[in-house]
Image (cartoon, rainbow, N blue to C red):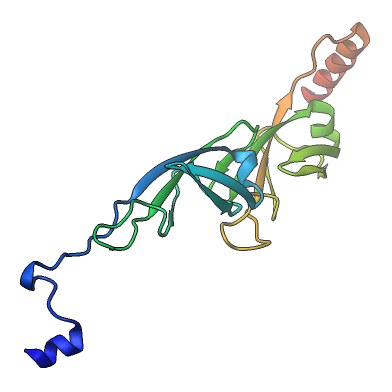
Length: 191
């Protein structure tokens, strides 16, 4: 018995010794917008009067949780502190739909460009790109812009894809001449 006590410092349960308990875990929710998590950035969170400086990696997902060790409740009898479990609640105020690391958007395509082909400037999450529209492009055609999606979580410099769907826009407020030309086209189509 003395041998074991000298090796292991005595039994905690013997002689009314105190048992150490780990502190309670704290849970917190951080509200962010999709624009906030496109790039890695720092935030300060106040938990129980203490400021915790956090680095939020780009690409975190809605509902994702991260554990911040040692920022929970105090331990009992000198036990370790609990952890802080932080959940991200990410709203989307952008025109893009996010699915994993991919983004989706719909852009208007005028009937002339759809028929004849041409260039179209579209928005990506971090700027604009010029697309070449093929002649006779159909409504709801989807094009993939590789690497123009959302950053991949904790994979520096890696991005998902952006899928753009063309939505055909029929011209309105046509002049008499334009209507005449469309009527001419209709006749040609029906021959």
